[in-house]
Each structure stands twice: as structure tokens, then as C-alpha cells.
Length: 338
Image 1 (cartoon, rainbow, N blue to C red):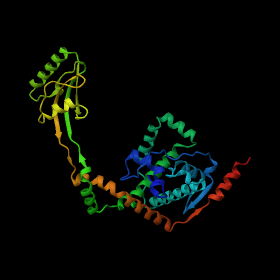
Image 2 (image 1 turned 90 degrees about the vertical axis):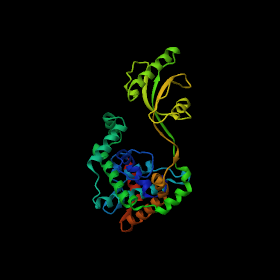
Image 3 (image 1 turned 60 degrees about the vertical axis):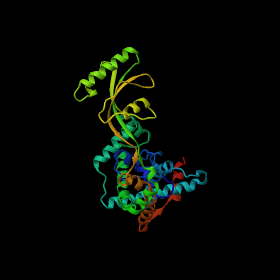
Image 4 (image 1 turned 45 degrees about the vertical axis):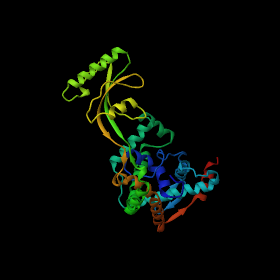
């Protein structure tokens, strides 16, 4: 996530956790999940207005939260405290404008998704008890958290509508990139087997047991290892084998045709196995259609950034924005006096 004054950066600080847990974003900006904003300061800063945006207001506690949440610049030492405040306030303004546009268009968050977001947040912090402690610690109510979940989902919806849905990588650009990078888009070899393996290497006892199991599998018309009855000496599992990790099993599997059954195979640890090949597909290049989504993901970044910047300008164009940070800080200082 780029630390510039672009909406994906600031927006994601409020709604990324909701996006991540509900899967509602078609192409959400990449970022580490962050919790919903919390009131790091108590009641009074909620009354101190730092900006008016059309009919909405932004408060000091929102600004403090945003300042604490903003990702650092690549050279954080180059940003003064005043510049950081301005960056946070600009981000809040953009978020408010986005939210206002979304509500004006009727992009209301789905109640079921809001509940999913709230429930998952509770789960992520430990459960109902921890959630109650969280509310107390941050001087918040359940309604506050629910409102932030709703806000995040709503902003995400307008972001998808105004940015993501409007970005399309030209087909010729995708094909050009594919021709240039096709050797990097490889589908790895896949070797999947049913593995019957003994738990211990007990010499001749294990060899007799393995041969007995092999005979039992062969007597079944379908040679189905899953019909074996576990007795505590062996196990059965589906697994993918790789040459660099299970060379002996891989070599045995590569000699089989699909649904073919091996003999008794000893691995590098001395454990005995019987394997049945269930699937083999060789390494190959992905087709253009198979690689298309990855190509789009690679190429649409600059287009997303460009469209986001355009949208920012559209949001600000006819907006009535009144920044009141200096007066708000004076008011805050006055409230701190005994």
C-alpha cells in the first residue's frame, strides 16, 4: 500500500478488516488488517470539530485515530508532526466525501455482512469477554463498532463502483505481457497418491505387515486402500508427493499409470509405504486464459492509482470543505487547562 494522499491508502485504514473478513471487495487495496478506529482519547475530543465536509463534521478524536493509523512514509523522518496531521486530515476528508457519495447513491451496507464483520471482529480479539473489555478500554459501545463496520463496507462499495469497476486492462496489453513473461507462468507438476504407510520400522514384522496390506488391497476389485480397517499400526491418507521432499515415493508414483498400485516402498526414514496414483499432471505453461487474472492483477495497479486520483478530484470538485484544525487545537488546549 502506497503512503500517498490517495483514497486507497486512507480508506483501507477504516475498512480493510471488514473487507478481509467479509470478502465483499472485488479488488481491495492490499494492506495489513487494521482494527476499526478506536477512540484513543475520551469524550471531549468527540465534540471538537476539525473540519466540516458538506453537511458532515470530522472531530478531533477521529483525527487522532487516523494519525495513529496512517502508514509511515518511506522516509518517516522527513515528515513533520504538522505534515502528518495534514495528511491524516486530508485522508479523513476524502473518506467522508466517499461515504457521503455512497449514501447519496443508496449504497447501504447489507445488514448480514455488517453482522458477519462484527462477529468476526469479536472472534479475532478473543470472544465476547475480550470484546466487552475492548469496548471498555476504548470508551466505545457496540453501536460504535457496528457503525464503523457499516461505514467501512459502505466506503468499500463506492470504491468498487467508482474505481475498481471502471478499470479495465486492454486485451492487447494483457497479451503483450503474456508473450513477454509466459515462461514465468508455469503450472507445476502434480503427483497425488493414496498413501498407506506404517507408523514404525520394525524390521521383518513391518515387512510382513506391509505385504499383508498390499495383498488385502489387491484382493479388492477396485483396489481401494480406503477399505482397509485401521488397527493402530498404519494409516491411510491422500497426499501430493514431490521429488525434492519424498523422492522414493515420487519415483514409485512416476512409474505408475493413473489408479495404478505400487509394491512396498521404503522411504528415506525406513518407513514402509504402499501408494496408489490418483492424479498426475506434468509441468506446463499456463494458457493465456488461465494466466489472465494474474496478468490483470499485475497490470491494473497503475490504472487503479490513476482512476483513484481522478475520483479524488471528482469528490472534491463541488464539495464544501472547511478545515478548522488550528481553531480545534486551540479549543483542545483550552479544555486541558484546570
